[in-house]
Length: 256
Image 1 (cartoon, one colour):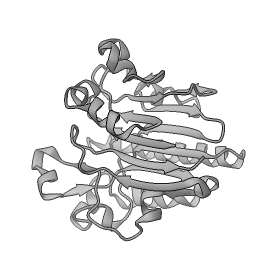
Image 2 (image 1 turned 90 degrees about the horizontal axis):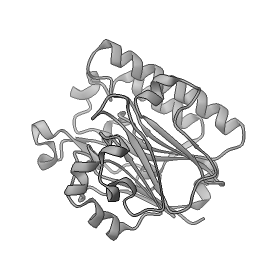
Image 3 (image 1 turned 120 degrees about the vertical axis):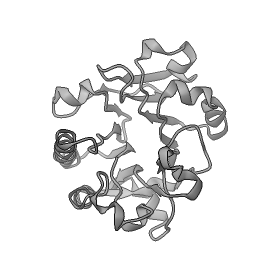
Image 4 (image 1 turned 30 degrees about the horizontal axis):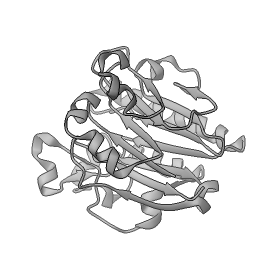
């Protein structure tokens, strides 16, 4: 099974930039996107499904903002669009959770906290609430895959300038501590599992500063799995060569 996650920075724009060519080449079994920036009724028919049998969208109440979607060939046993019954997270279109029998898949667009104190606090609360929820989920015996744009870089090698960026949202000390705690719950960062020390491998670049040209980037997009799935994990990578967004796709494959 191949799972690909990609912050497409607007699904309609990415579609026009060759999204279907990418999918026809990679042929993922599950495709998760973040930042769709659209309601399903705003997009063309093919974009709604991307030729998958099943698609599940969670869109923000605010038009042109946030949004996630999960595309599947096999229908899940259950679908949810929030955790812990917190309506603010669903109203911002941040989560699609699908039950695949062997595991629950969380497709999440984590909040960005860089626009001010209010959004910073919202993000920090989201991170805390998510860890509480995931701890309970793991304690119940479920295996979990968490994919998406985490909007948090974990280690020094995950950003192009760790000293300068240590005061920026997404690489703040408390956010890095959160990531430590997330992994301590029993999660594996699949990319680091195979490439524990590889540097200058990023998944997002600031378009305003032409960061991609100089590879001045951040690794903030992940496929993380609970440890019970480790024995099935075959590979994981970052597809930096793929364009169409300010992010690139991340991928993990499993031998289920």
